[in-house]
Image 1: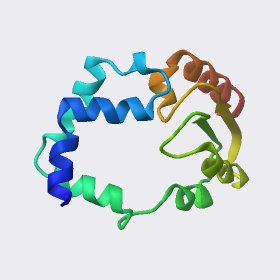
Image 2 (image 1 turned 120 degrees about the horizontal axis):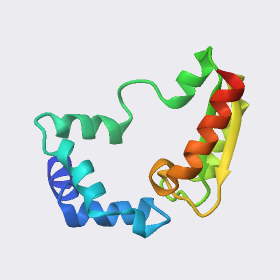
Image 3 (image 1 turned 90 degrees about the vertical axis):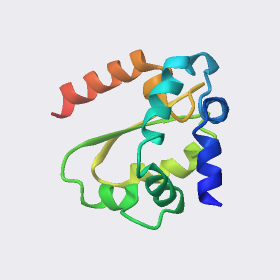
Length: 131
């Protein structure tokens, strides 16, 4: 089942539709982005990585990292994220290492792609203050 699902997912049309559900700004889903994301999915071993990712059965989750992180962190979350709603992410701001929690309105799952200019300003401000 996983092989069939993955084979369908890595087709450009299906991948584009998945990205449309992840991005609030549909114009951010360009042909170049689809090709960039599709390329690793065509590599040998990509299926195993994909299955491990969607099953969460290997490796730590973000909370595991934040619990032991010794440096300041900033978390930026798109309020319109339909894959991982902001309500889920808000618990991350309770970790002592998370000094900045930023919610971006009208932004989906990939703020760094949808509003890179805002991310650059936030990152510069954070690094200037904390690093």
